[in-house]
Amino acid sequence: MAYTTYDTGYNNQFGYPLQHSLSHGPVYGVHPTEFGYQDPAYGGAVYSDPGYAAGVYPAYTPQRSVSQYGRAYDDFDIRDPYHSGGYTRHRRNSMSRSMSRSMSRSLSRMGRPAFGDYRRTSATVIKFKRKGGFRSGITLGEAMSDAHLSSNDEYSLYDLNADSRGRIILKVRWTGYNSMTYELPADSYDGRVELQTLARRISRACVHFLQDACSDAVASLVLTAYTKLNFRPPDGQFTILAGFVLQNSEELKLISLGTGSKCLPASRLQEHGDALHDSHAEVLARRGAVRWFLEEIARCCSTPEYTSPWISRQEDGKFALIFGTTLNMYISTVPCGDASTRYLASFQDPQMAALKDSSRFPELMPNTASRGRDNYSLYGVMRTKPGRADSPPTLSMSCSDKIASWSVLGIQGALGSRLLQPIYIDRFVIGEVEPPMQDVVLEDCTRALYGRLRSITGLPDSFRLNEPSFEFTSTVFVHSKVALTGAMSGCNDSFCYIADSPKPSEALINGIRRGVSPKHRHNPKFRPLLSKLCLYCVFKNTAAKAGLSTHAETTYYESKQMDSDYTAARLALKGPGGPFEGWVTSGREWEEFDAYGNSITVNLE
Image (cartoon, rainbow, N blue to C red):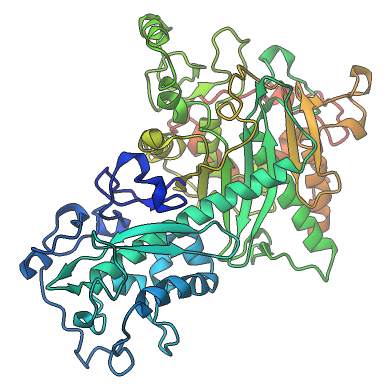
């Protein structure tokens, strides 16, 4: 299981989770001493005990002196409200049993904060207590800071069932998730175990488990739903999978997924809005999420007895995510474009790398997008799809660029902004990235998906630059390039799924529904569910139920300009002086159609 995002201060001297059992040996060839843990509030510094640099805790060494620990612990201080009276001596293995056995019960009672973002709020909900005790226990923050643990001098390595190296085994379990086993050093002095240090290590293992449990749960939810759908790439072809998952304190809910890695060349774009220009997985998943939100609003407005557990209407009349609800995005591999430049380069053989280094590309002018992987050594630049130089040029921006734009504008888009407040992605869960590359990919995703937009100014109050977290999962997507050894080409077909929809899924090829003959392509019942025209119809239907008048609007393009705040935010991002100035668009002429798919002649002069 991947854990680089949790272990931000990780280097090869820190501890590790045992994937299944101790017999598997150290992960990645390293032997554990401690997990590193960073908190932005501490300036990125790794937590450490006094006297230990960079948060490194040495393995069990009986000859150490007490001065190495910074200060002595007074665990019999009766002024300590956590330990006076109730935490008396409990011998043998009671402490280790209580911590490991009660962990799953404590975790199962936790709400959204710990499950979602440990960096901010997990200290308030993770608690450790003696089995059968009446007190609530100590929190993660207290265990990480200066808590007094009772009877410090009463516990020996023998009491904690430590092995010959002075290490204990901690198994963390949570119903519905795979358990994880950790090996933790139990430092001692004169035969007495330092429980405060041990509590920190248990806390960090627990936080690591939570982060991994959440990222793997998101990935598993998307992957499980995909396997139940009637889609499979042809033999020898791989595809990419993406999905959006809502999360609150009670559950995870998949709202959309998409597969694909193709887009239409500029010469084949349709003017009636009934074909998808971009069929990459991330784009389809996002359009599916927009449709789900529009249909959820319609359900809220048309069914009085229905109360959505995910969105609610605000004072301004728009809908927003209910407090405590977050949005996760799973992607089976690194998004194309700026985020994946170094990741893709790591797979190149030396001969190909030398060829690319010697290639001469047209000079990239300021505020312009590079074509595909031209100038591939440049970081932070916008790029168009596809990456291959021998493919026809397109007017579709890379997924890295599109996702970055969502970090400012939200995923709801121009039409959705008329009914929804900006909806931002809180967490990305990315697959296929092996541990040696995770630090590189984390750095590139941070730069590509929001870091390069930090210069943006002039955003309306309802918009902001969102900074999501990035996590990795080792959960395998069965139709990925990595899983399908020998698959050399991407699948031409795409697939989309929208939860709770009357028509939940369909397969696509070349931007239209698969199996539809050319003469039936413009028939309304054969329009792609996620095409501009279909989403426009869903929007108008939902707007009517929500009490938003759209009668004065004649075209799809005109409807997209009606929310002034979204238009201003888009101008700040992509207009003159914006960080994405030079953004390539298909143009207004491809959006001048009405809700019936009829082209409307407009004088563009």
